[in-house]
Every structure is written in C-alpha cells, then in structure tokens.
Length: 307
Image (cartoon, rainbow, N blue to C red; front, side, top):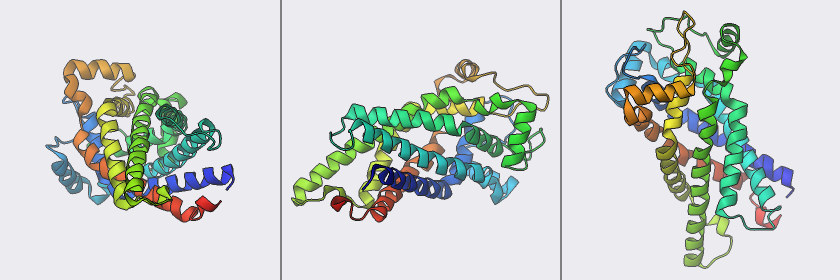
C-alpha cells in the first residue's frame, strides 16, 4: 500500500466519523454553547436550570429547529476538521516513524496530535465562529439574525472585517492540547489493550483483536481526561466569538479580556460553565467517532497485513 493511499484512507475514515458524531449529539452542543456564554449578567437567553431544562426550554420557545441551529456549519466544520485531523495526524506519524520503519514513542504520538490540531485550528476557525454565532441566535436576540452561513459570513466581513473570523483563535490553538492528550491516551490505552488480548489469545494480527465495544471504551476514556484539563479554553473561545451588540460593541474585547472578566465575576466555576452537557455530548461522541473510524479503516483496507 502506498503512503498517499494510506493517508487518504485515514482522512476518509476521519471525515465519516466526524459526520456521524455531529449528527448524533448536536442538541447537546447547542446547550453547552449557551451555558458557556451565560456569565450571570446581562444575557439574551432564558435562565436554564440544567441540561434537561435547557433542551425543554429551547424546544418550547424555538421549536426543534432551535436544537439544530448552526447544524450545517457544524457538520461542515466537524467533517472537515476530523478529515484534516486524521490526515495530518496520520501523515505526522508516518514521518516520525520513517514510513513504519521505527516504533513510535508516546512523545511522537503527542507531537503528531499537537501538529495536527494546530493546522486544523488555523484552517477551520472561521467555520466554528459562524457555527457559534448561529447557535447563539434566539427570539430574544436584538441584532438582525443571520439567515444562514453565507449571510453570516457576508455580514461579519462587512460589519467587523476579516479579522473577526479569527476571534478565539488563541484559545483555539491552546486547545490543541486537548487533541494531543486525547490521542496520546487513546494510542497508549489501545496498545495496552491489544498487548493484553494478544497475550491472552496467543494469536497473530493484533490490529484485528479489538471490537467496537473496545473502541467505544478507549474513545470515551481518553476523552474524559482531555475535557477536564482543557475545558476552560472552550469557554474562553466561545465567549470571545460572541456577536457584538447592534451598536457594534463587543461583549469582550479579546480572549484575555474574557479571562479577566470571568475570573473577576465568576471565579473558577465560570471556566467550567456547560461542562455537564459537554461531557454528555463528547464522551459518547468520542466513542462513536472511534468506532466508526476504526471500522471504516477495516473496510477500506481489509487486506492491509498482506499489502
């Protein structure tokens, strides 16, 4: 199998996995985003008591479509992000392993994940900003609502300039550590599990020893560690990406302003707003992602060991 073929198989598996993840868990993403921007002061949203109450309230006031606001850019962003992530990640691993001639260390997995995350963040920040803006639209919004992705892009460029598309890029780049932690944990836990099963079954083809339940367990476990460590960066990015008021005044001037104001008025708890729906969304979502990813790879290269 050629290197380029292996890379594109990896990218395809990642893109399919990303789409499946977003489609299954999107309403919780809406709830998380709205909790994240609720700083307890002036807000455009009703007071949500908890995740279930938020889902009920959004459905009652905005209909089911309210739970899927910004779904198109979310699908686009997730599909592109996962596809690029796995592509860059796989390419980096190939480079560090010198085309599979050397076994990768934990440091190499960490460097590969960090490199992939930074490149993806630079490529996709405008998509995530538009998704966040669309998710935060509701009947109480005072500014003219965006009608869709194109209208949002055109309005942002006209009213705020192209640099607005990169609001929240700083914490977005810091969130590279999220992917690095998750993928390093996943690879190491996967290796331990494969070694254990290989010894137990005393068989060859260790890459085929794991099943979908194993992938779900590995994906969920690695995600929990990454979320707990890096979640504050998500809150900072979301707050920094909010749409300015109709007078053109931004809620926060920049990411550092978000940090100072959040710490001043809310303390450490402010940096973990919305973590419950985030865990409910991302832990099973990560399990789905890796189940789909690993099984799509098996379909794309069923005879890999003989290539």
